[in-house]
Amino acid sequence: MPEILIIVLFITGGLVLLYFGADWLVQGAVTLALHLGLSPLIVGLTVVALGTSVPEALVSVQAAIGHQGGIALGNVIGSNILNIAMILGLSALIHPLKVDSHIVKADVPLLAGATFMLVVLLEDFHISRLEGAFLLLCIVGYVIGNIMTVKRTSPEEDQIEGMEIPEDTSKTLWRDIGYLVLGIITLGFGANFLVSGAVDLARLFGLSEALIGLTIVSIGTGTPELATALMAAYKKSADLAIGNAVGSNLFNIMFVLGIAGLVAPLDATGISSIDLYVMLGVTLLLLPTVWTGHVLDRKEGFLFLSLYIGYLYYLWPA
Image 1 (cartoon, one colour):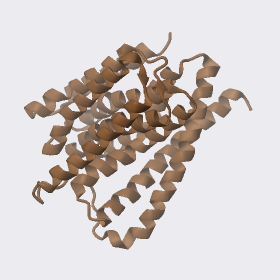
Image 2: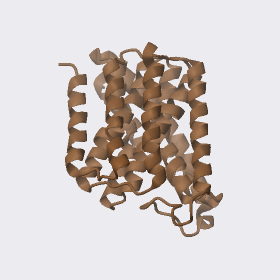
Image 3: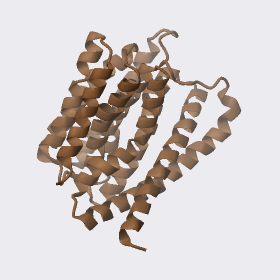
């Protein structure tokens, strides 16, 4: 069998496993969290966002273990650009997005600050174990802050519009534990296949690992966020669409890079300042929408999508 066909099978198989693994993981984790008494808003901002970031985490950790820092960092940077520029852009084209949840509104400026912090940390194009530990402490503080904030909200505010809540979680407890375990196992195999295929593809065509991470890998690991956001936009649930993208980006920066950097120091081989500034730029473009209360309309969605297409055009070698 030709080498390219084997590589394509590895990448495709990895993406399929990541998609279904993330879906099973989120399905099991959400119901378990609700069964343990966590509120719907906490589940939406933490469990769902963490669950959809697990593919990025496993891929980046796998890449870190193999000393492929370009894939690990490119995966996170590319995913964060994709979550805002492509996913929210497409979502706004389907239906204009207006944020009502005050916590989601607060998370967008927080994401801008976290993105700026990452740009500063990557000034030397390196994430050390100490910096990885610092990022993990940041995500712990973020989760605790969310829990404390939600405890001060009224029951009417304690929800994200569009999030489906099971009526009786106890009836599906063991089934959802099974989904959780199956999702974790499936994600592990998917991450291994995807990273192996991506590295082989880069070597076969002489492409940099960073380029593969910024494009193919980030698009593949971003499929859970894409599916969630597009469905939320179709159901006219702007809070869920934007909240998932923003929460996932925060987890990508602090949790994914934190745990990957703690496993092994990351060298941003092939990552350029342009990649970092594009990530920061599209994040800052979200601020006027949440600060002014304006809708992220179809024109702005088209702008975001155009920026993403232009970025891909800039990245890909002639």
